[in-house]
Image (cartoon, rainbow, N blue to C red; front, side):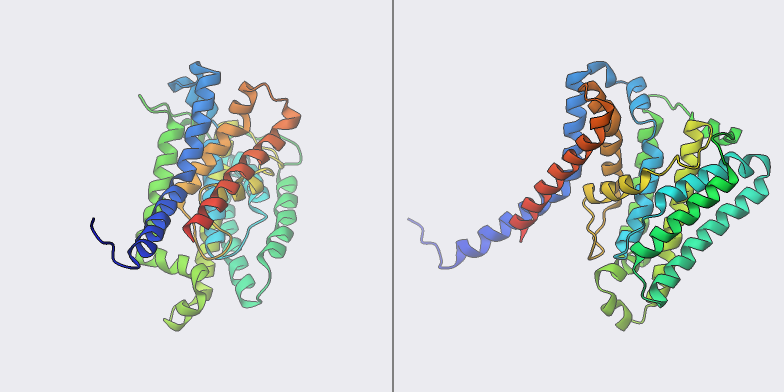
Amino acid sequence: MTAIAPGTLPKSSPRGSAARARMLRGLLPALSLALVLIAIAWLNPRAISYFGFNLMLNLAIPIALATIAQMFVIAGNELDLSIGTFVGFVGCVTATWLRDAPLIGILVLLGSIGVYALLGALIHLRKLPSIVVTLGMSFVWQGLAILILPKPGGKAPDWLLATMSFKPPYIPFPILAALLIAVVVHFGLMRTSYGVILRGSGGNAAALRRAGWSLLRTKIVLFALTGLFGVLSGMALIGITTSADANIGNGYTLLSIAGVILGGGEFVGGRVSPVGAVIGALTLALAASPLLTFMHIPPDWQVAANGAILIIVLAARVLISRRER
């Protein structure tokens, strides 16, 4: 028999187990999406088609953009409780001023991104809890949306309607758009040197400060990116719904947080995944209505069922993380 050197198994076995746990943890968002797709295919095979995916993922693009917006804030160890009402505000601006007075609409949307950047500076300089500041801003965005559009109405610009109704061959537009969003944000945040700096502001702010980087600037950039993708989410939503409502994006706050966490992100440490966040958004979009509808779950119970799905996935991730440690 071949002799085994003392200490060989205790060192190699845990290392291999941790590597497998890390790989499983990274694949968990994709596994969650695959399970939802398998369940839909089993319940209604006709839904797995070009037309079916276009219908089921109709609202996936604005949800994915709102999730990416939330991801930038979470990357800096912050949380945005106003992204849903901000999406509604952008929707009202898009369906009114951006259509009737494009120059004013563009200036208002750019100004709203600037407000988000100022919020990042305020939170950093005054050391204010982002939850409190963004919760207060949620009422501001909601009030502004009501002032712009007191009752549902307006109309999306023609160019936006044409963009969101684009029908490419072979692959549904929502899937192509999701892939594009994931690739662009992944490259910018995970593959560039400044992306490392942005993530470092949440992972190790002290080391970043010692290296000479401005935490104020990184916080401003992260919140400005949140505002930018929030604007894109609101515009995409109006391009799909064709009209606006001051309350149209209220549910996006919790959806965006759930999408980031479902996609492998964490509230602390700057650990986020753009690809995982988009996959999490797609999973929520599919589970929010098509899957639960095919299962004949009443609408009153669908919110609870969504929460149960999220809890199950997060519980599995906690178990995997323990195995990794």
